[in-house]
Image 1 (cartoon, rainbow, N blue to C red):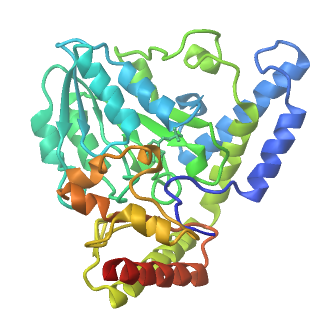
Image 2 (cartoon, helix red, strand yellow):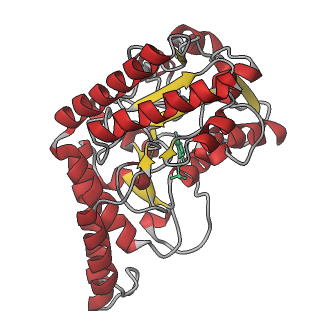
Image 3 (cartoon, protein in one colour):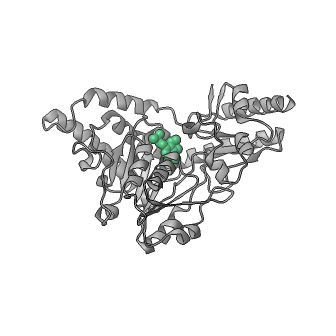
Length: 378
Ligand code: PMP
């Protein structure tokens, strides 16, 4: 198999897998237990938190571990009480864990605005400025889109909101591995992260909650009720091995960030060139600039994405996001950038990653091109 679906998930790094295994064996005691063994477990979690905070340039207490970005996103939206006097702004291309949580907020009486995006998948900061009202309690705009890779102008949006004193949440799940280096250049108040997109274990993520937000009138209501873990903000016995592995994965991803970014971008460009040489009618749904370096979404006119994937079983790509793949509806992201349902259904996402070689990328481009020719000839 040639795995080209790195936006869906990444394989766990070998070194991370060892760290997870080791932590699970050594620190099995409950981190909340007051005895020595429990305190050692708590220290393993806090050491992972300190490491991540150092790499992200934030304070350890600003990072709360969760079960993943889905939980972090739901948690953020749940912080706003649904009532007509509470307004939330988000965008049409968010992950469903933001969008569906926001729609649920609206169904329960909240006031919701869903902003459109440009044909390249960008949110216009002017649209954000025009949408906010005195009752706006939260704006949620993702950092990098998981289907087309567009990177949003978070700094501009943050400066619009700062003047108005409105908190900004950003789902940085896809941005953490390549484009979000540290939080000094990413001025959001609340940020969601997930470990399995950066070669870490699955089932763990984090919500960054800035000190500024914690000190504001908003406070931080918990999503779950229970024990006092994570400073009482996120109860439930911590997934210690995964937390320790998440920190290790972040550390590893920072080691060769610039060179790896350039390398995957090179793979993506060559792959697209190879497709275009054989099928000049293929178009990119991903923006040419301000895009994740490893994400490429293409439209292949006249070819159904599902048929294409079935025709090249040895190449693992995706039609729409993995979370929606049981859903027969065309991708909400592709529809939001103006594609027709048919065009959306003839689009595939190709994601390159740490283990992708140039040979594999070329082989996949040839296999896909050959199948496109066969399907078109049918
Ligand atoms: N947000 C984005 C942008 C994502 O790509 C994903 C994963 N597909 C999620 C949220 C959900 O993350 P998790 O799998 O950690 O719940």
